[in-house]
Length: 628
Image 1 (tube, rainbow, N blue to C red):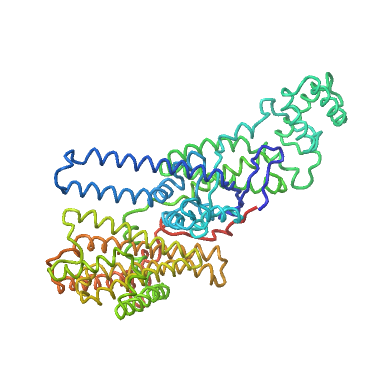
Image 2 (image 1 turned 90 degrees about the horizontal axis):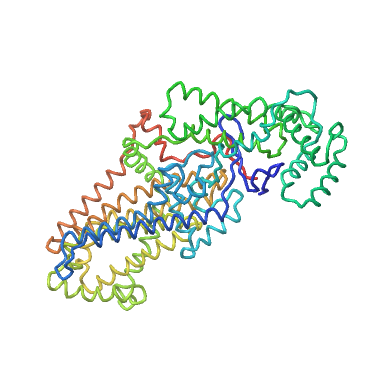
């Protein structure tokens, strides 16, 4: 990646990425660096920490003051709120802020950073979810973001693994209004009518003169006189006709040169299209300033806050400025001047506003959850089947091994599970259940189970970015653990005790794990077997598919966790009743997976044909992008 800078040293020295818009205009975005992204992450961590501390403080003051009394339902629900809000802060903070605040968390807003999709478009809820779930891998080891930092260092477009999977980049925003004074610098000297074919100075000479005058007051008198004499000798032909001291003549020359350039006179060394660049700036600067004002209003109120006539005028002006940008970029011949930088920021800001995602409606949400999600799970049956094999085959082998040789259980299970199985023998004799019924604390148990299981599926999905190695390990490890537990209880003759507990929620929970594993394998397939696609495009497309599967997995786990917390521990329900609950969940799962089908031979309905805008992640918009 080659950083670029302004010819006049006014544009920041930074890595940029060029994006071609549907109007066939190339926009240049400044990529956010590691330092600014780390600073934003620290701010976000502090905000999230304060939110959690505030939650704990509120819960403590809402809890009963008499700690000696027996736990009540209010205590259970208070703890349930803590568990759920903690989960929401850990996993929802980044996703919701980026999705609802157009790519900006509070930390990114302070540092003027924004997450956008590869085409320069606003981030969607789906893309935000993907990039932040893969954060599990990026933040390793532990929470030091070693993987993410290495990825940023080697990425030409400043992407961590989550950005690759989501098809996003993080850019640094500089509002056009902050550049207006620089762009119109020298306008106070008046606008001279072009009286010559070209200016007296070349661009290089003009840059040297401008730098000298800017720094003149910072120099000692001796240094001022020495440098003024040197520069006057170098620019002697251009200073012909000027009177006074060297410093005074140089200032008047700079004033005239600025006026000539703002009047549209070409620089002395310009040739071909480059001769038009000052004329383009002179003719368009007033329109650009007016558009900057209109753009600021549109960003503040949103396009919906403007009248139909104002929106049409805004779009027409955007197209005019896009044409100006294309002409100016050609005339500048690759140089990044303040005017080009300013105009690029104006057009880029307007582009983001015009192509901003629409608000997610309840109808789109329902269509996504009960149409797109089951359709994607059916489509991805192969990776789901692979995940099921990696879960159940090791489970069968481990279960058989422990059943035949109970001593093997000590090698596969933690001591706490061995003690629970031994206790289970006594519980079975006394007619009790697998675990004590929490009763009052059922909501806490349900919320804890849901959040834990959802995090496991998030991990199985994110681990797909390790080329599937992490996903394989998670599935096999969980399969061995499940199989060993079943084998241990069977060897003690109390398998029915375990089955009575697992039956109500087991179908949904195990299915959710397989679906999440399949989502992880979609990411792995993009890395290992991209086919004719580039790996970047394959990751973005497969990530779009995978996030639908994770949404489905999370839905199943919410139901499964609720059953595990409220139904599975009930001791007095006979096994047959719980098996009926299990059968009901299996039927409901099959019916859920059948949703989203269209009649054979029938054309898809508009709702089936168009995916929800907010949850989709289009890729390769109008030529994509390249970093430089």
